[in-house]
Image: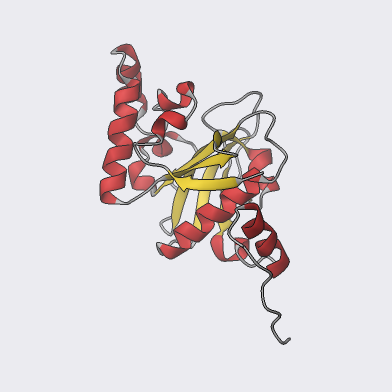
Length: 205
């Protein structure tokens, strides 16, 4: 089964689920977001946001493909690009962190390690860009797929609560901790991504 994570661009934006392509929950402040929906142009606003972030900061997401079929995605950016983040009771996101906005994996592909793989890929990308951590607002009362990720799922992939709240805790993942997994886990992930073509040479202990 071929798995790969590809940077999000305007070219592969159509591979996101339709409801996510037309959602501007994170990309606009509450008033502007409501106005965009009323005017019937949330998809255009989403495209404009991604275009602006690509030009100013670079890719702000990854699309997950399994056997060339898009099965999931993750969106993240510095909090300055995420107007909605200031509307949360546990804001602001720390200055040394990027914000994990949202992520989704198609039913039928959940529970196969794709979520952890996404977190690992995002961590590597953000470390290269000089961030120390990634933070997210979790939904402690999550019931169904929504723009805010379930706090329980974030905790399961290594996030820790830094600002508790009965509904919207803010959670943090130290990037270097994420990348300090054992080599055999790294190798397994590389094999899943198809990056390893031959057995690695053994190194002396």
